[in-house]
Image (cartoon, rainbow, N blue to C red; front, top):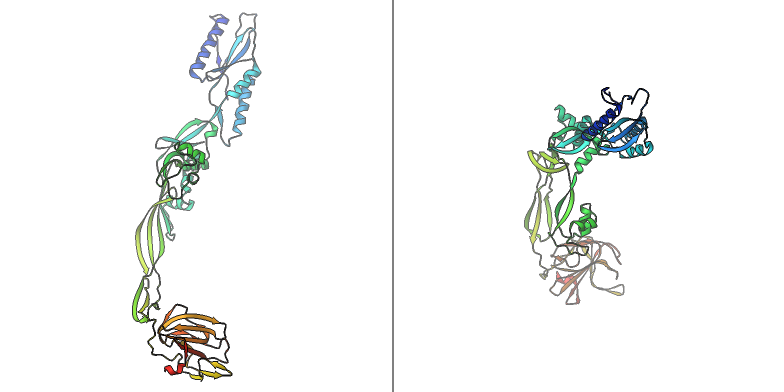
Length: 482
């Protein structure tokens, strides 16, 4: 840093007049230009036998701080201050925000308050650095240290929303045809302008911090419509505000205010300083949902369903054009669509036949063949209330007539798995010792429909069906019904 210049005096004027005249001119220049370099007078003598001493008047810009006798001490203190500031900021070279002027004056007796002046100067001096301002639409947005850092910031701004590989392929025009997503463009909303300037070092950001600042943006006030379930606290949290700040933005509200649906509340939100628009072409294979067809069949009981054909999804190859702004998709259109696999329809047959719950009085045999192994009457000293049927062609047990299932489940009285059917015409039938049951209480059954499988649960000597029939509460021999 250069601190010295020299002004020579003229021999036609007296030394004292010349000194005062020069000092006045220099002070005026310092005040009007605020850009004086340090100046040193040459030695001036009052006469051939008298030596003059030198004092130095110190200015920062237009402000005068006083006189010192040691100019080097001032320079050293300023240099130390700049060095100290530079250590706080990586790769930033600092200089004084305002010019330091050290103006010499030769006097007969030099006096100065060195320590006090130097302390005031070092406390008052401010540093600045060369910087590059990045502007969008003519509005300065952020400061970085140089143009290289500015260009890096713009690249990193794009890389927030696309990959390095995508950006390289776009710039080189070499997209990978095998990729499902192809980058078509990535643009910053407004053209960036760079301008060299000077700024306080704390205002100068790295490329990464500049990107974060541009995307976060600045706070602006906006309106929010109250939705169902909203309270002041949830609205504040949703907009990154404290409840106190929300109340401050809405003077008409307090903590006990009752909010109304669609009521407008003042909130603040960050608005990005730039928008990065990304357009892509994306390919995908999507499922085509199969259709469902129901065919009614009057020969099937109502509630019965048979699957005639299993359904199967189809497939289609589809190409979308998408548009994103700062990572949020704002538009998607279909460019091309092609069916690659047709879906298979799901077809079911649904019964519509209404099963009457009232018995017809015409009874069907409860098993598929078989013989009566035991009849109604006394057996082993006890009354056998029904008939036992054994060795049928298969083990299916059928309802002897239309009716409603009264109960279906385990019986603790020795019947094992038991089903009771009310035929709603005075008759009631009981089926016992079943290995499994296929009906439930409250269900309507038709004559000949399955109610379970023959077994030997409960007190049974083998696999058989125990059938009991009652009419108006009185026991009836089932064999008299056929």
